[in-house]
Figure (tube, helix red, strand yellow):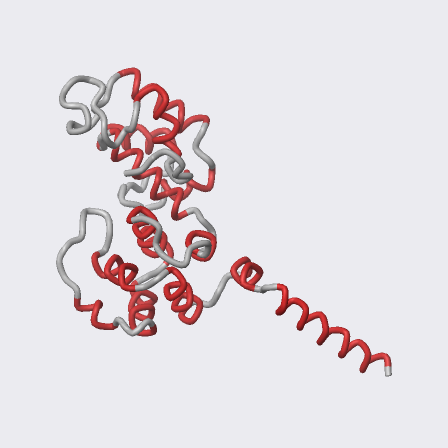
Length: 219
């Protein structure tokens, strides 16, 4: 996974300067670039410091949700973090943080509205992660139907341990613009989406209509 420059890699970027790419390197022996990095006392202490002082509150709230891949009901933050570190490899913890950061993006437009095409597989997977966090089964079916890919609802099997294969296949079949169009049709755009989508001509038209109504009222 690409870490450098990825704004959602909060923990991986925090660790990178001292521990290297948490997804690729084993600094505790083994084949570099092959064996996953394992826990050391130093690494564990630094990760705990990150959770205590560096993790944004909105991302933390998504990380603690029962719908997250970590199925815990304990609302105590420190106990949750301790359990996370005890049951995950370092790279898995970094991925949990990444996915929570993606889910914390308020709207789909803010996540993918800047691109006409998928720039990378990571971008596509981020869209899948966001949709799985914000769309239930009914919305997923309506998205597939509206976009003309209702056949994807029949997809079976497992893409990986994290993502629903049907949602992945749907995102893979659509461009960002097509996905946004289907989302707006099924769910409706958020207020911030509407603001982003108003271009200068639209704003000018609204203003002219306002002046016209104002003139009529004055008469």
